[in-house]
Length: 616
Image 1 (cartoon, rainbow, N blue to C red):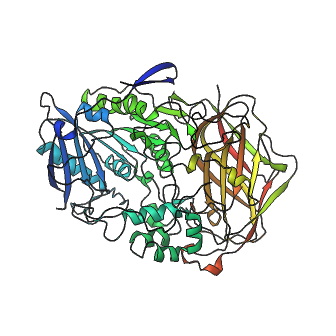
Image 2 (spheres, helix red, strand yellow):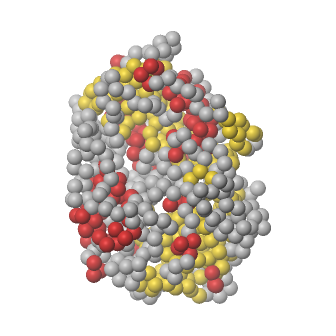
Image 3 (cartoon, rainbow, N blue to C red):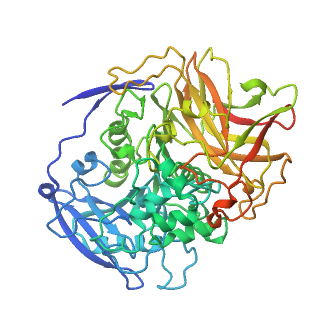
């Protein structure tokens, strides 16, 4: 067995690879059922029961819109559960196609809203489907111990969040992992109202085509016809053309996704946070600091659950991961940034397994800290009693003249300006890609810093460690010559010029001066006063924009600089704003116009980022 060692404060832990497990068919017997719900609809459910009858086993359920393939009682999944650790331990693993998907009956609805008040069996939601499934399993599957758990990553994470509402009494432990929280404010398709174009096109075509409910329809990407998404999407131009040319008008949800362009009742009903009350099971929320899809939902699920349900067991795990990387066999690096340890294996063995084992099998406390979080920059796991940590100080980083960034506001007012041209948007990545990449949230930003339409502000080299722990509060004072504009803010760790390159270095990566993105978020300017009722800018008039970027836990080492970049396009990650107040999904080619953007600094109407600095 190979071993790796990592530093986990306060002790040194030796870490083994996962146990070698038998093939699933040797260890488990598979059963297939059509489980009836309270309204008569039947849901396809695959049950993998351990062949070991010497003891009773907990039930571990995941519900998915992505198919429970392979179908057939004699066809087995290659692996079971969240990890090989739990597969080896032996659980009754249950997989279910959600309502209206693949081999389940009923009508599918994206992020189906919860129904808090139910008057009869016709009132169904994802909570009732979970409850009815667990009730049926307890009565019809043998050799269980009467305790159930639930887990899921991404969209299945949403179903896990819904499953812990009005939970079945046997549901004792749940783990929403990268759960969808709000598809308008911060997850997947929209961030602060800005539309994540490249991600939406790929996912919607792959998962929401008009034939996708068939179990025989393979998931595949659109026909890009080019690896260069920047040029491809720019040539297509408008959202209307993208729908016609790339999606072929075959994605039913596209109209809802683009047509509900404000934070209306449609989106509010699908905000998971509104329903996170009276939670009874223990909760382990898991996510990655560099999750390009559902970082917002992860952090908000933990925070709102904590706020609304005092006294329950509510834990948070945040690692240095892309979307779902914690379930993979490799958590050693992301892009060009190494973590010098297999963070995924450590989490699987030392956090996820104890959480489920001790609650579902041993019926005792799990012994885990409330917040188990990876500190990037120093590459170490840390434990806290709460998140954000209590021992932080709130400070502000002020934009200053001549591209400076500092803790004190400038003594005089002024501004920096740039011309934003939708015909030449700022590329979102420094390489060729045709969709949202898993690395973009940690990518080198030197390509952007060199452009005239990106403002750059940075500190002097640091003389000691600076650890940022918690959300980032952005305040911008801006003006535009247009009537709408996006403003993208990026917080960046600038490495020293003499920082060593990796060894070995087959890609010939140059890390000296590397500008590592720590956090970046767009804000669609017309929502500066309200996400429900957008307002145009008055050309040339200074306006205030405030928003919060998702939490970070990052240490900048001595010799590094802290940088802030401000720009008005991030393409094709985010769709182009025409810089004209209108419904962007209805924009025509002639609506896209240049605009001169000003970002103001000063002692009163200044621009800043509020941070929380960990006190060491």
